[in-house]
Image (cartoon, rainbow, N blue to C red; front, side):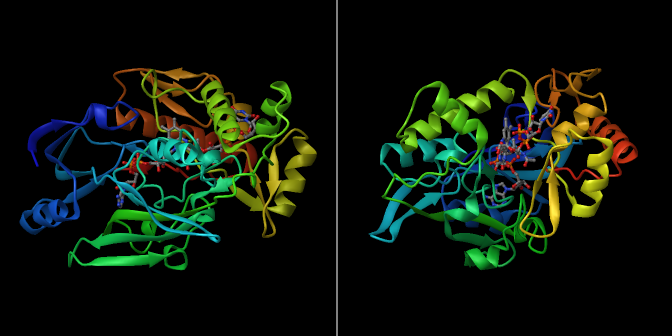
Length: 337
Ligand code: FAD
Ligand code: EPU
């Protein structure tokens, strides 16, 4: 293990924001984590791929601990499913590709989501009709106070839309070391309900899609909509899609017939935040080094040299205009550090 002093985090956050921390270390094992934490006196920040964080400060007198715990292993293989144990430091998309290669279904709709497997439960990642919770079995995490390893079932994790217990009561208290997912051997059971995926199949005349076809379709859709962080700094959707009461949605629909909303299981309607932001005139707008992406208004971008506070200020202006125009409050999905 190598400890780095005054470490530049620019390449460790997908916004590409220049920030330094006093100490940085990448751990490869649970033993590494225990060794580092038993000696550490600095405030701690747990870092995965840095694809859902916004660094507001230029310097953190903190220990940034990057999860590099690797390994993918099938630990149970029955008719009911295949349970796979994955190290928290594995890159999510590399795991998805491994699952496809092994003809195991369940995660193909979540192809190309950036970041690590260990961070996936934090906000219950999701895309194109599937969320982590749909394949989740359990996870192991180290209690950062006691250094004990604790197992969390799906129920313990309290998953919700872009939410879990680790963003609430247990925020900052556990480091997720291993995640166990239940995948399907029968790869014919696909989730292709999302309109965009069906469109690709029709275009490409794919009549009996495989998990690889779904993955390829999702990759193509994502590449056409979302900016590549290696080209333009961003953290995916900056805000969550807000859920509003059905009655409020009906009133808004009278005034704005094109408003986009999807009924929830509950009595609410989930509204497309990208549409709201676009209607407020923000799409493609640039302010200094930062701006709103030209193809996806829910994605804030750093054109280079932008600071975290500039992005935060832009986000606040967007929140204000959406609140004024539609009476809807937007909540950030990105974690401010
Ligand atoms: P980081 O950004 O490093 O960390 C995120 C949070 O988790 C921080 O609070 C951190 O302290 C904590 N954390 C990280 N690792 C651990 C750990 N092992 N134990 C405990 N806490 C930990 N998300 C979606 O859900 N769906 C999408 O479709 C999607 N698309 C995206 C597209 C782009 C282009 C980008 C840049 C991001 C997108 N995201 C999406 C957001 C992001 O990919 C996910 O939130 C991802 O899970 C973040 O993983 P990470 O390893 O980068 O986490
Ligand atoms: N839209 C607009 N204008 C825009 C952007 C979107 O009108 O500028 C409309 C689209 O036309 C579409 C609707 O809004 O009708 C929804 O857009 P899209 O399908 O692009 O999805 P999204 O709601 O913007 C969500 C997730 C993404 C996820 C995709 C696919 C959230 C906050 N975002 O985006 O997740 O990949 O659906 O499932 O739930 C992330 O969390 O970082 C992320 C990228």
